[in-house]
Length: 111
Image (cartoon, rainbow, N blue to C red):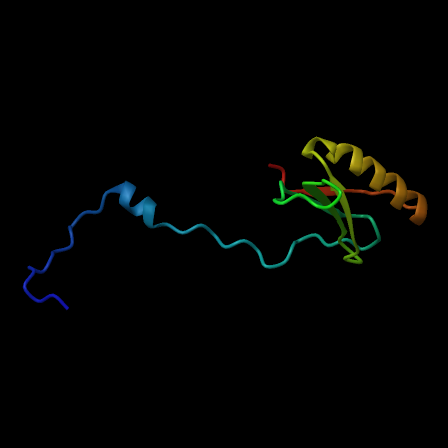
């Protein structure tokens, strides 16, 4: 510990920018306020990539779809990020045909 330095006095007034810099954001809620009550009512989706090295099938991206109620996950591999809409259409047609229910809400990160 250094002992030869003079003790600093705290300023009497604090500038507004200093006070704003010390503010904390409110913590994100631990649980979502809305949870699905039926299958496909809420589906979460995320895209990952580019992945290095690419897969054996030369795919560099993948997209996931997760049913909020069952937590079942579907994964589709893609060459380019631009294929995401086509993969969603493929996923939507398959799950709606199999379950005879429609996807009500698709939640993405939105970047």
